[in-house]
Image (tube, rainbow, N blue to C red):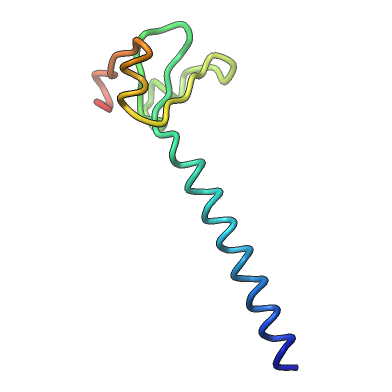
Length: 78
């Protein structure tokens, strides 16, 4: 019985670690721009929410967005 409990605990920990790693990867994309604009925003910016999914361009860093020719939004100031 003790071995089963150890296995179940190990399995649950493995699942939790996997979920945390997946979430951190998803949260790593903190900037978004549009193919139709030269601005980039935080993903929670009100203007970022207006961008159609098919027009979104994601950036992992501010420098990546700037090097791609985008300028910061003046509302959310990323």
